Image (cartoon, rainbow, N blue to C red; front, side):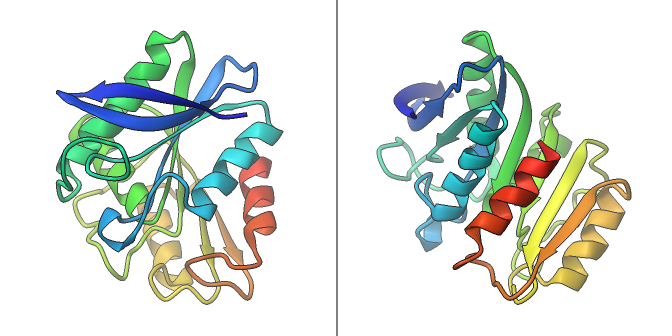
Length: 200
């Protein structure tokens, strides 16, 4: 069961939930766009945490700055990269091997940028990277990208464009297209969990 936690990002206290599952290995999960209602309680975010639970991997979900009870304000993906670094630092200080990050939509964009711009060294999972909405041009390669998932009817993360992105970032990454679902995975969360658990 997840327990509420707080940690500092720069000078801001951020709200999070940690489910350690008795595990030594941990994943940080980042949420969709704050300006469109995204937060750590999003059903897709909690589905990623559920896949971690099935595989005995600790999961830290948290609210980016300015979301929920997290201090600060939306920072166009720049401050949010610092929030990701702080979350990984929190886990490592607590004794976890924090070498996994997963992001849904906006969260996947933040994670990818952080790998390039701040040197975040972790294996990555992308769920519905928003290629039709946000610019991934500054991210040329992600050697530790392991899995990319999208829905067959996702117009924000269209399968053809997501496949091309994955091939450019890491040709060895697994790409999964879940049939008959869109960006929100209505009625397809179990299939999403299975795809994630298979990779974990």
